Every structure is written in structure tokens, then in C-alpha cells.
Image (cartoon, rainbow, N blue to C red):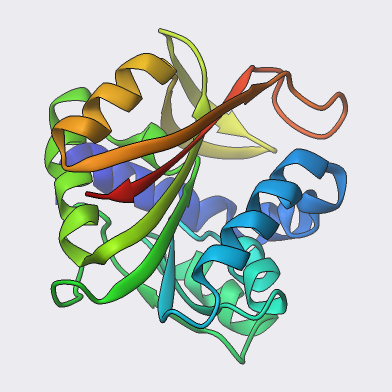
Length: 212
């Protein structure tokens, strides 16, 4: 594990309890996210296992589980996984690294990765996307969400906790190109402004693609 990934894991371990308290119900204030997740669920339901990568306390996995999707949550932070298991004991959660997944080839019907690729460095993005393609079955769906921009926001403090986190903003066109290079066919790209008083004030992108 790289130094950056170690810092990311330790930082999310540090804020896991506060993150769970503040974010577990966030989808209630995000209607577009719910709409996109509902459509995703319709496509993957009954087709096999779906992974939530960078699942945090498991609220996204919980939502999709409630839509009838068989879910697996994976996160770099052991404490986040502890909270996910407490909140949703009926869903499988495990510690793991999306850059090197402990899953066989073609294992998944779908993947959601909301604001987890923002912790992947530019040089690692291509190999990481190819790893996601490896574990997706042919025709499997990948839904990613990220902040739009060119900057990297560094935080040494979050919600009163000492952390060391880099949030890398991404460009939709570049993400679409990276997905194509990794063997995905982009189906749809959607953008929205931030929801006031609900989330960090950044423009958001959602890209849905299919394993070619």
C-alpha cells in the first residue's frame, strides 16, 4: 500500500464514527442520486452480485439492497467497515483496495463507486479502471460519481478530526476517455450543481458505463 493510500485509510478510520453519524442518511437530501441509483438497480437486479467500492458506512449499499440488489461493500478503512456491519448486518462488507480487488474475474453484475475514485492518483486511474473491468462480468455496469474540476483539495482537519486527505476533482470528458481506454462503453453522463446545506459546494458528475 502506498503512503497516500495509508494516509487515506488512517484518516477515514479516524473520522469513521462522525462520518457515519453525518452521512448515513445523506441520500434523503439527494433526489438525483436516488433516481440514478434506482435506474441502476433496475438494470442489475437479479443479474448477480453488485459491489459498492469505497462504501464507507454502507449507506449506498443499504439503499441498493433495499431496491432488491444483492450487495457487497468494500472499503479501505477497517473502521468504516465496522460501522457498515453494525448498520447493515444483513449485507456483506469487507476491507479491500479497489486497485487490487480480492475477487475473481467476471464476478460482478455491477459496480458503484461514488466519490472513491477521487482518492486515486492520476497515474493509477487507468490501472484501477482496468481492475474494475476485470471483476465485472461481460455487459456489467459501472456507475461512478465525482467532483468536477481540475483542483486537488487537501484537508488536514475534518469535523474536528486530524486527517490527511486529498480530494482530486476530475473532468467528465477525461473520465469518459479513461473509461474507454480501460474497456468500457460510456452510456450516459449527467452533471448537477451541489445541494445547498447537504454537501460540499462543488459541481458533480455521474457517469454510467458498460463493460465492452
